[in-house]
Structures are given as C-alpha cells and as structure tokens.
Image (cartoon, rainbow, N blue to C red; front, top):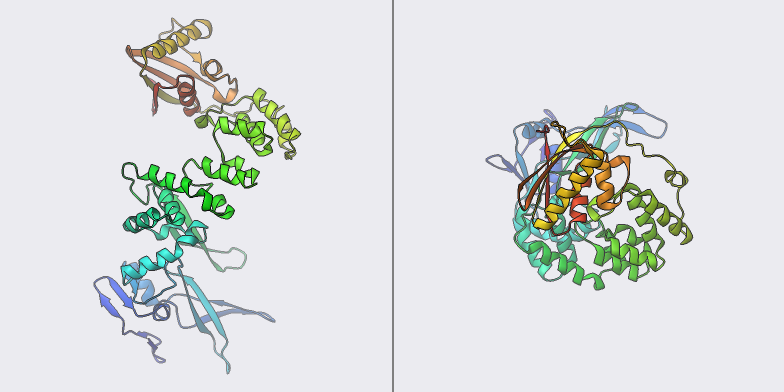
Length: 431
C-alpha cells in the first residue's frame, strides 16, 4: 500500500467483493485503517502527547457496514482487536519523531475458515484461562469443538459447557478522560441474552460427565478455573479439596456435602454454612436463619476462620429489608393429592389463626409465618401475604401472593414438599 505525498490518500490494490474488502496481510490492513501521522498535542521535558486517528476511508467503510478480510496464513486479529502502526508526529521537524498508534478495529473476518479454525484451536487454552473471550466462538464452531471434547480435550469441554449457558458480546467502548482529554478505550465483554451453542438432548449431561471423569488428570490450576462454570462443579471442587485446597469448599452448594466437610474440620465449609444461613441461598435449600447462622459462626471461628470486623456485628443486627416493593406472584402446585391437601389445610389453619378467613378481599396470611412453618425461617426479609388459594382439581392448587420476592416461597414449597411440581409466575396485578 502506497501513501501519496501530494494527496495523502491511499492508493489500494486490495481485492473488493460486494461489501467486503480483502487484505493480503495484517500490515496492509493496519496501513489502511490508521492515519499515517499523529498530531502533536503537547510536549514535556521527556515525553510528548499525541493524538492518533483512523483514516477517513476506514471510517466511511464502517458507516457503510463493510467487512474486512485478512488473507493470510496467520493473523493477530482473531481474539485481538487492536491495530498498531508506527507513524510520524506532525508538525515534522528536521528529525521527525515517531510514535506508535494503537486503535481498536471492528468487522475483521478471515479469508479461509480452515485458518480461522486452526487459530481458534490454538486459543482454546487462552479462553479456558480467561486470557481471551469465549465470544471468539460462534454456533458454527460447535461441531469441531464436540469432536475435540469427545477426544478428552478439557478446554473444548469447558468452552462448550460455558457456551451452552451463556453468550457474550465483545467490543471496545471509547470515552474521553475528563482530566487529560485523552481518548480511552475499554474492552467490554458483556453477558447478553441467549446462548452461543444450542444444546441437543443429552449433550450437556454427557459433557459434564466427561469433565468429571477428567478431573484426575487436571492440574490444580485448571480445577480452580472451572469453579465458575454454570454447572454443578462439586465433583471438581472435591478433587481440589482432596489435593489440599480446602478453600474450594466455598464453591460448593450441596448442604449435605458442606456439612460433611464442616464436620471434618474444613473452616471454609463452616463459613459457607454460616454465610448461606445468614443471607439465604434458597435455590439450594438455605433459608435465612440467624439462629443456625450463629452456630456455624462460632464453629468457623473455632476452626480458625478469620472473620472481617463488619461480619462480627451482623448477627446482632435487626433485619432491615428496607422499603416494601410488593409484587404479585402466582404459584401452581400439582401432583400428589395428599400433599396438595396438606398444603391447603396448612394455609386454611394459618388463615384462621393469623389471617382474615371471611374477608372477600383476601386471606391475608402472613408469608413470614408460612415460611417459618415450611422451612423454619423467621425473618422480615420473607415478608408478604397470601391473598388467595384455589383448589382447581384434586391434584392442582393455585396460590396467589403479594411479596417483595417470589423465589423464597417457591423454593420453600419445593423443599418442604419434595416431589411436588411447583411453578411460579409473576403477575401484574392480584386478581
């Protein structure tokens, strides 16, 4: 690519097809998109401040939605979205100073899918260790990733399981620093709606089992990096504990296993039981109970866990859930007739004792009392009221409530009446 000294415009020899510009190398693309000079802003005793920018032609291509393909055996632009170019600083003196322009670029693609696949395979390990974003993969990569996974590649298994639950959008966001007026680019890698890979029947369970089976040959570092996968990582965390990393108990949610670890002297398991009972983790059967939290607090201290100063006072503080923000919820329970009748009779009894049984406007059973009966938790954080209850059939019961949160009662019903199908939906208004 040649820069005309007279016009300072680019004379390009690149291929152009439809809405695509094809470049022979990274350098050709970088010369195309970065302006061939930097403006001098200020000069210090040892440093100079400059401003670099894109070429007008590159900016125009972005406006038109054009894509850029690099026709090369290797390219740095897969997983790396910065272009660099050494340019002179204007105004030029007898010995022009040179600075390096570094700018984020968009819409870069690859000439050969086989080359792109090769580069992505090389980056699997970097994605696993969070050095690169999983957003470099798309739905078309699933087939070859599955083949890698079937051969026992834990990095491919990790990427597939992550992508079956999550989808990321990655881009550079620019803002101007208020103090220096510099353009600052921040790499954004945000979780968005949707998934990267569509899951077929049985695929996820098979991949999880592959990962569990591979835990014996995984390094401690690899085991630590899988702890945030959106799956049950308990077998992997137990492997870490087996190898002497007791802190892995902090990433286990199973009540029985945490209690077992706690009974065997794991201070992190004791702390986790304290924390979950203190703050609640209803999905896993932990409902707020300061009484239970206190017992685990004392045990964790005895085992040598060092609490923060602010945690020492939390047990003695009164519940402070703040202002009420009531929402309407509908719970549909179906299944065993005996269990349905038990719930109906329980709410009828609570209504007689604490509610308004003859009130046409609603039962007004305090949800806090219902939660105490169901799971032994008595806290203002579970406040709310049961408005109506209707037994539609012998094995189907509908309960409507008004509360700050809907999930605590959902999980309490599932926990107290295991095997019963309990579903919840949020309503705009109580009917």
